[in-house]
Length: 108
Image (cartoon, rainbow, N blue to C red; front, top):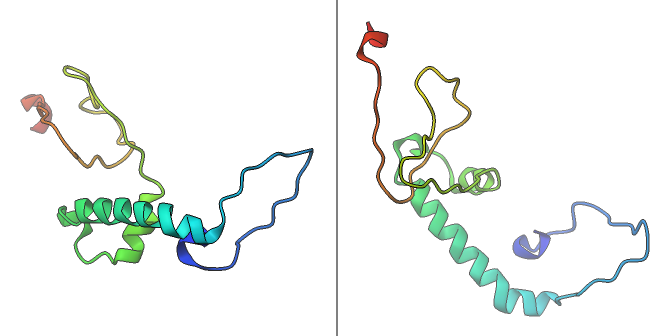
């Protein structure tokens, strides 16, 4: 990530055994990969800004949140979660439709 932000390394890496690596020089990384990653981040930030939940959240905070997101695909008829289950996260729908149902008797 230091290549993306043009900052100093946040950690040291010491080989525990013989290691073979492929190295991409910073100038080449910047020329090719950085712009692709930045476009992807911009796309994801624009997506998150569509939700009221993120109103007033800074771009920096949204970028930090992106590191924690996991994408998941559900097929038709899959159950995302069930009524009365403890919530394990917040779901942001990127694409597709779903049906919400609940037991009316549970709301009384």
